[in-house]
Each structure stands twice: as C-alpha cells, then as structure tokens.
Image (cartoon, rainbow, N blue to C red):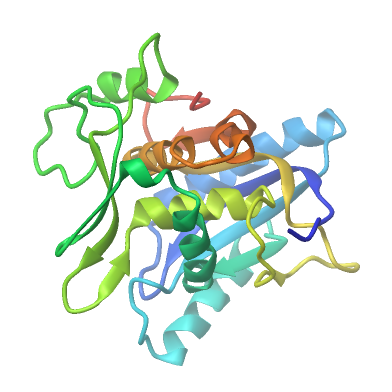
Length: 252
C-alpha cells in the first residue's frame, strides 16, 4: 500500500446525487454544521481536508450534462470543498475490500452477496416498516455491552446486473478517506497547491437518514481481516443533522 501524506481530519460534509439538487434546508444545515466543526478544528490547530462525494454510480449512464450540473453545484458550496470524489471510482477498491472480508460471514446466492453477522433482531437493511424509533437507532449506533450489528448486510444485489450496495460503497469510502485502501482518483480543488486528502481521523457530516447506511458500513469494517480495518471505526466520528433529537454522535 502506498503511504499518502495525511491531514489530522478528513471531513465529508456533503453527499450529492447526479440529477438531484439538495433542498435549501439540507444545504443550509450542511453549511452551518460544517462551519461549526471547522471552527473547532481550527481553534485546536488541527489540519483538515473538506470533501464532497458525488453519487454517479446509481445512474451509471447519466448524460455528461448532469455531471457538469453537479460540478456547477459544487462550485457554489460553502464552505468550499478541497476535494471531490465520484462514487463510481469506489468500485475497484470496494472489490478489494470484499476480498478482505471474513469468508465465514459472506454468503452468496442468486440474489446477491450478503454479510451475515451477530444476530440481535435489529434490521437496518431493506426494512419497509418503521418499527425502530430514532431512540432505538441511537442506542444501536452508540453501542452497548453487547454487539449491535445487523443480521444481514447486503453487499451486492443481482437483478439485470450485479450492483454494489450503498453500505459496501460507504464502507469503502471510509477506508479510502483513512488511506487504508489504495486510491488516487481524487479531484483536488484546493487553492495554492495540492492539499492532502487522507485523514488520520474522519468526521462525517450527514443528514439523519444516512444513519442506517453508515451503521451498516461500520458493521462491514468490523467483519474484515486485519486489525487496521476492524479498529478503523475508532477513528471515525459522525455528526448527523436535520433533527432536534440528535446532536453529535460517535459510532463506537
């Protein structure tokens, strides 16, 4: 693995989707939260990179015009990001991640590939009802004396084509930002010369509806061979916004 220079904290504060413009509220909350977090980092003398992930994987054949629209939106974001990454570029490192999963937990079927972990009746993937309250999700995310992992985490779905799931791509994104998977497809937007992308720690700022996906991503990390992967979650902090019930949260 190529060693890359790192900043103290890699901060993700926006996840954009091709062909969809975030609501004004989402943009405002992301801006407000990011500015608060960056102020704290600066006051403690910590270096950081500020990145945006653009989902072009859901629509792999999207017109070039839609990608240009996404870039135009990035150009208006405040605070200004130092890096952007296109989600489709995470496919190759995601396959590398899968080769590092514990084989006894991976189940392949005609419908796809599933990661089976500890059972505690907490369904976080493909749930169609609302049985779990936000308070229950918070308890699960923060952790307790017993493991709180999903029964099954889908990795690959098979319909007309095999598709990597959001959970797998999110886990890959975490490891890429920590420099634990080889990756060089990063667009550097920083002024005054190249800016380091990889962080010794991660801060992820997202709306609360990402809790399910991020919890499943951490489950995947816990199921990998190698302590550098399974212990990576200790270096990851989340701040979920857009709810009065949830302030800041470290998923540990």
